[in-house]
Length: 173
Image 1 (tube, one colour):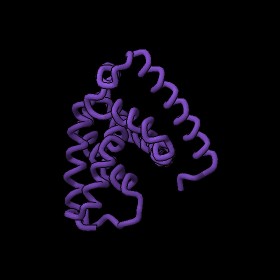
Image 2 (cartoon, rainbow, N blue to C red):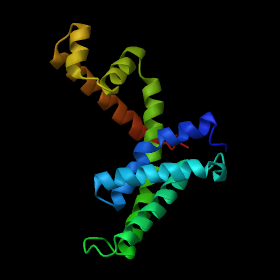
Image 3 (tube, rainbow, N blue to C red):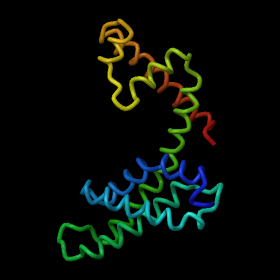
Image 4 (cartoon, rainbow, N blue to C red):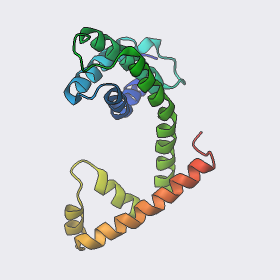
């Protein structure tokens, strides 16, 4: 896949939070984790041609991130608060096991959002867009904050039930 392709840029962008979360499971310093994410992004960009279209981008990106964390740990080996390699490997394996679950939940969420009536989907999107708040939504809809909050609560409950049913039915693959 070419690094200039829209698909590669889209995959890289979509997976930023998940890659950062993965790095944070291996290293708890948020500032350093952000630095490692940037280093990972640079490596992913340089190795874009090595990514095989149709394979699991998230798993590939996390493996690249893992090697960056490993290199960082080797540099910091003198610090007595650094986990040894066995602990790091254990944490990475546990996170790898959870990756599929997170991806399945994200797919289920997308499917369930599509099933919502348009007005409910718009409310959810308005709430979770950058800068979205219940207060702003209430003011623009000429409704009370409590009313908007209650509506959002009900929509979230419907989404949760839908996600659980979708995952139980194995419809995320």
